[in-house]
Amino acid sequence: MISRYHLKAYALLIITTLCWGLNAIISRLAVGEISPMQLVTFRWLGVILILLLIARKHIARDWPILRRHLLFLGLMGSCGFTVFNALFYVAGHHTSAINIGILQGSIPIFVLLGSLLILRHPISRIQGAGVGITLLGVAIVAARGDLGELAALSVNRGDLFMVIACFFYAAYSIGLTRRPKVSALGLFTIMASAAWLASLPLVAFETWQQGWNMPSHTGWLLVALVTVLPSLIAQIFFIQGVALIGPGRAGVFVNLVPVFASIMAVIFLNEVFELYHALALALVLGGIWLSEIGKTGHP
Image (cartoon, rainbow, N blue to C red; front, side, top):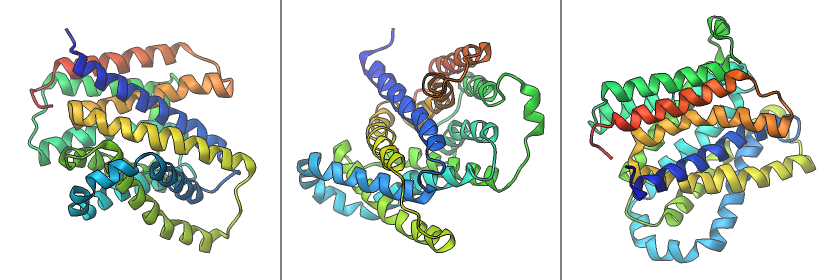
């Protein structure tokens, strides 16, 4: 019998992955409308402006604790928000969607291995099998139902960028276990502020390399969407989900992102839903179930 405590975590993490799946759709729509670093910078600026309106009481109440952890939270925001997203968007210019889908599915592996090495949380065989099954589901989606395409996977700069991005987000996920005991809104405000500050040198470098092109009207609309859903709602829910069930088990849900992205591509981009999408979804959900029943006692 799953407790209400765990059901809350599962709901938060499913909504999180839905928002992140939508981010994949937005990233495709953004090509030619707004540059990658502009999207990173403006999304976190938008998040900060919203948080200053809704989180002022939380920030004021939590500030004595937050102030003592500014360096740690700054590193968390820079790694999990700025660096991951910057590498993700840049990778899309150098590698295929197949590669990105496969490599993004490696985040739970980085999280579980990091939890083992840093937090000394053991990984059970059943939990490892669950991760493997979810990765198979991710691979089926990424290969569009033809696993023979995986043999053509080539390593290039984009692949390397994506692997590094996954490492940074896994480090962020593990770091959340050491978060100070403050509200999610207060915590997120500090990390989002750090993310925006860390993005400024990146957008400056991009402008120096490519020049500044003002985003189109569509580009600004995409900034608004990515600010509210993947950047604001998803990150707050992910913080709460990790706090409830830990980074290892929460990280497995990341495998839902490519599945949800495929489903939303059917809805928003009029792509055809294939049999392999249903098979991949069954594998991912089955893998998460195995990972849950194979938990080793750590939250």
